[in-house]
Length: 541
Image (cartoon, rainbow, N blue to C red; front, side):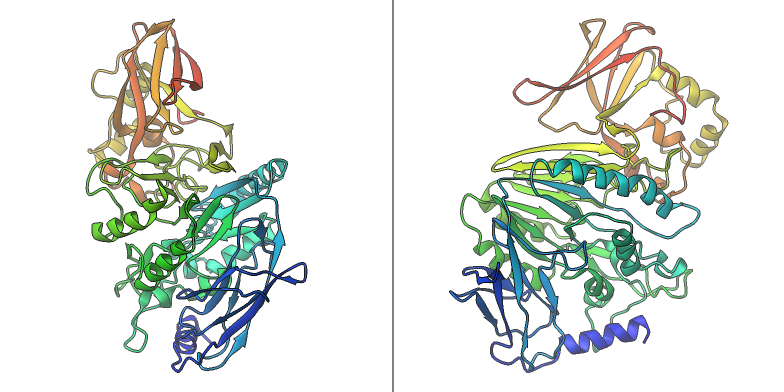
């Protein structure tokens, strides 16, 4: 059965009419004993288990799942060594009852760690060597940090979407299920909780009069392989909500790959079922709980201009903002932008959106080691430690470990830009790019500080004397001259602007510059010493 027919068959099963009373039943236990007061959901309604650990739902089954919202102090077993067994596929029409039981495991969650990896983009593309790079860098790196952080407490893995790449499902015979199985077979540690990215959809599907929801149609294989597209769980003092904010449209069009049926386009926001479920989910959360939201597309723009949100509709973001800020700040963890930013925006002052940089850099495409993001941060993973209300975060690159910034001696950069023939040709084709061969760059020092937060201040000292530092919205010099395998983001200057780039003019060409980051209390959180002159090349680390 081909994929489109299987999609239609699955949708027909899930949308069968005539839901019977309490047609979803089951029991939640721990160590063989019933657990009372645990929430269970079919993606639309949410019920609580009774004193015998039993739940009953009158469900139309249209989401195709039932899942347990694990309470604080508990986790769930792994179903395949990687995914947590918090959900079950529904296998019978809506009018037919079925039973699904869930098991909980007690866990000390006073302290725990989350390892975020996003935009891994397994493509099975021999030109990009993506599988080779994942084996060599990503999986050993993740496993090392997983094992190291077990000493702190439980470790949870979170995938923020785009594990696969819809354009290559057929070109390289590599769909989301194969991408997931590849991670599992290569020893990626669990439990792995995931959200769905835009590239995790099947571009071969199209809406039909019988099944007009293209977003639902295109999710069919993700749902089969990786479970619900939205859900929640409690860990320690935190309520984690995993959202699907990609609405796949896939406007019909003729494209190069005959297997792809449309433009693979999408809008950003929540569908109606998800919004209604979220309201019910948040109603279960007691006051004083930290609500943390994961999604693929960032909630804010990656820079403080425009309408403030990446949501297609400001009104929809306003609605979500009102729901989530009831718990204080809206604490979000997102991917999608292939850049690292602690995003803020004046329109939504209570949103704290940590844009996790792509584990694949720019889809395993840029830089000599193929691991530069579009703001030239190095590909890696974000690790957050949680203890009650306290949170600390760190960024570890695959190739260099802990790394806060990259610094440039602009005397050397300008000379390189003026004499490099490859760069000259690129700037002819891309006149909107920042050309560091032009303008007054004499004795300037640039620092691309991807660990910068808006509440931080940046100071630079030349031989002990303080320099005047300014934040600039320009492109990182290294990104513009490095080898490029993926040109997707290089069409317009605005896509490659770096929003954590700082500069100061030194007094001398040969001097030592000390770069200091201070938090809002004035405490030094990091410092780097740069010795000049400093050479520049595409091999800059």
